Image 1 (cartoon, protein in one colour):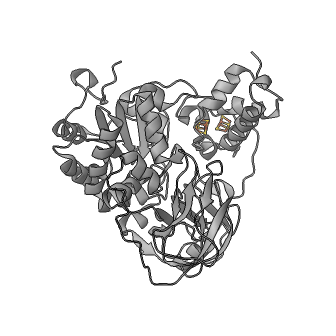
Image 2 (tube, helix red, strand yellow):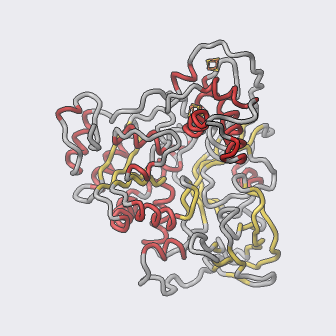
Image 3 (cartoon, helix red, strand yellow):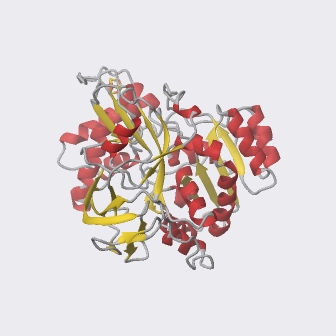
Length: 461
Ligand code: SF4
Ligand code: SF4
């Protein structure tokens, strides 16, 4: 099968899409195909998807992490007692891979401490007491003549998947000689609506910056993938992309069509070996949030100080999509949107792939995409497998979750078993569908991490 984009009903008559007009024609005919497996989940988006993004200011100090990932070192650029302006650097990168961090507002540094983040645990942070004046640095600081890579790094643009600074993701893609850029706006997980709101509110900028990124990457094709069911948004994006070098791909959206490997398989009909990377197939997939952050850095010349995230769940009074300062304590964020009764469960991210908040002092980071608060937790009482086969049927990569779960009790694994463990996308769908309530996805993730930590000597051939 060639690498052109195929449609479901009549692929043999069609050539790869090259022009927006043809893209519109395909989208009129129906959504492009999905992968085998997956599930259409109840979406719980009706309230938040209709509300415009709102800037949410929270009283009290911000605990702004001084780095974006545990292993990416930076050095503080401020001392206790310093007054900083909005956008001023709080830390400097100390390697080509790390990025600087910036003050989300003006105020005084009252402490250099550490902040809890759900993905990295404790990170060094600067505690910033806002002065309420929102005084910003003058916008142009001499970066305008720099390359796109330098601008992304200087402005601290982060990508959530792969979770790395965007400039290093792009450098790696250029080195790998990618030919296709896919901007991933599928957002098929329930509750999440930040991508949809950004498509509605920033449509022109998204196309503009996608063209810039495509240019820097040197790709021959740029595709924006979004759910077919948001037809008005699809039409708007098609109009915006008309005459530009960006194709609009309106896709069916069973979960987890949003996973990069699954998306590439469905969109380009391209098989990726277990544990393989989309880069190896000449494709780079960027989440929409990273593209929107890139627009802020490249088009507005502004450092990244806020993130756009969904706050929802039945314990939330004013569910919506909010623009929130990096370093905002989640607890204060929850108080600000209002709570309905007690919170029994707090999740950072989507309900299937997110992480339990883990610590009541957790703060918002550049890659936080949601805070979900629920008033009840469903009691999980696992029983033995009843061999219904649902987990195998719905697994997007066609692996057998129960057999992988059994590896948990083994001291080591074979290379074949390891490759199956690595093929798992951590989408959590098997756990979701399992009538026996077995924690399949979580167990596979834990088992893979253990074997990876044991490294090669633990694997038998
Ligand atoms: S978590 Fe892994 S095993 Fe379970 S459905 Fe997703 S990809 Fe398949
Ligand atoms: S879904 Fe659960 S009960 Fe059904 S086969 Fe898979 S593990 Fe067994």
